[in-house]
Length: 317
Ligand SMILES: Cc1ncc(COP(=O)(O)O)c(C=O)c1O
Image (cartoon, rainbow, N blue to C red; front, side, top):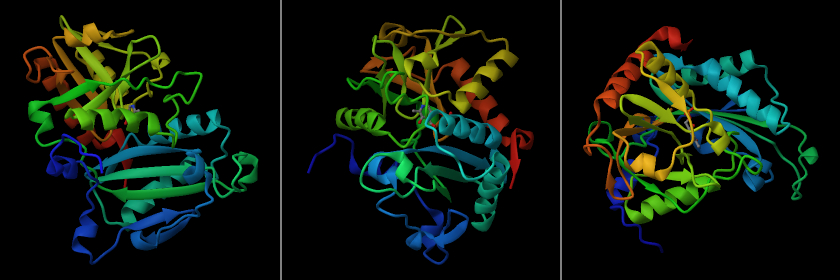
């Protein structure tokens, strides 16, 4: 048994919570290859290469008040990832959009966190993907809470971990693949040191990203964020935030960031579908700026909330 320094209750807060599960009256309906199964019956083969080898891709998507935010963008990214790993998704993009919407509808949800997975499918115990006849498509519409306590108001602490991002010529995080051990190793270090989240460096020592978020800093009224050549995912939330900055005439520069630049930033924040926009107030025990969410971060948090609430930014359920 390993003992994390995080209090157990805080760890519990980070678990995926299922409203439907709490009532136990009406199980979540999970989509697997065109059929719906109650959560307790939703099972796939232990020979699926997604399970055996992490061979597959996924998306984490949110719906807000009956609208799936940036659904088309998530589907586009998923298809780009599938192309990169030579995986033939057995649905068209439009069919995939419809399947996501239908799954949320079936579960009577308006505000949800959707996990969309396409795994390589059932093969044998060798790793050759040619043995996998048919990729497996899974859609889960649930809820998620990854923010520790009052993270939005107080900000979160981060640990720059010893775990380097996989380089872009290895299992690059540019592909949102089922290989998340790199991120989990980082998260384990954050947990063990009592930090809320981990930040990974890339091979040359520049900041890459958080374990499930992109990283931004604010310096002298301007915003800086690392390029995807660090192995960072092309974040959909990051893209939304960059466009908001353009709208408000805040200069954004995509450039390599050092740990020093992060330590000495005026403000810093994470972006991600699950976390949304969250201030980073401490990194490796150094206070960032005033140690409180800064004015530009706060403005972007408000504008992000307005953006997700705008039904023109997604697909109606
Ligand atoms: C490794 C990693 N980086 C960044 C992000 C943020 O991406 P997005 O804003 O598209 O959710 C995620 C979450 O999907 C992630 O897993």
